[in-house]
Every structure is written in C-alpha cells, then in structure tokens.
Image 1 (cartoon, rainbow, N blue to C red):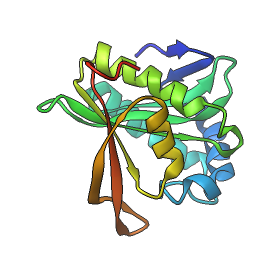
Image 2: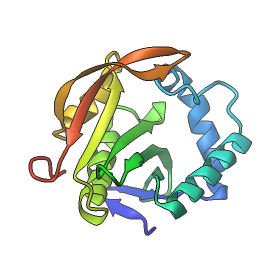
Image 3: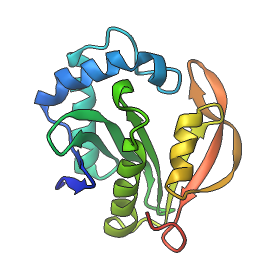
Length: 180
C-alpha cells in the first residue's frame, strides 16, 4: 500500500523502525487513550509494538484491515488509524483512531479520518464506514462529528472495554452524503 499524504499528514503501514516511537507514544498517552483502548498501558514496550506491526502486516496482505500509522510529513509519529472489521459481504467497515497525548487537540484525528475514509470509500469502494465510540468517549465522538459522520444512535453493549460491556455511539460515513 502506498502512503496516503495530505494536509501535513502521512498515513502509512508500520515498519520495524517505528517500534520505539510507537511505544513512547503509547506510554505518553496512557491517561487519555487507555480508558478507551485497553491495549494502551503503562510500560508498553517496543516488542509489543512489533507484535502489533506483524498483525497489521498480515491483515494488510489479506486486505482484512488497513491499520496505519499517522505521521507528520516530516516523519514524527502522531498516532494510529485503521479501517478494520471489514465485511466484504456488507461492503462496510469500522474506522478507529488514536492520537498521542502531546498532539491531541490539533486537528490530527479529523484530518487523518477524512484521508482514510476517502481511501475506503473511493479506492476500496466501501459503501459504509462506521465510527463506533463509547458513549462517554467525547473526544472520539467529536472527531466523528467534525468529519460529517451521521450519528445513527446508541448500540447497547456494543463494545467491550476493561472487561465490561459498554454502550457505543454509532456514526456512519457513506459515499452519497459523507464525502470526507
């Protein structure tokens, strides 16, 4: 997959040399990211990042997920974003994102979301991209609103976070009304 570059961002597959920066970003972001993404924990190590990168590489090769790093065009690691839970039968997927704590609030997540959603809707030809966020995850829900995703409702027990079911807000992007 070729990198997706726009508006100061580069979305690309992870490579082994990203592991140290990835681990640093995770450890920096425990307070703001771990309540929503349980893999984000204190003491996260580069070896864990390499395991994740390996899974990402396999999923990309199989076209079952497009899990990418968010980098500045100067190469700074900013976070992660992905199209996952791809259903070819229903022609839809989930879009998820996280931004390292020191870079939050700078519009990175909406810019990256628009870029990856455009890839999903045009290049992959998907007809529905869902942004599923815990109802209490206001930062992620704000990103969905900023990119013009339509709020469709709350799905009870839709996510499983920290060992318990959590209600989730469902937002969707579709080609006819939500061109990012």
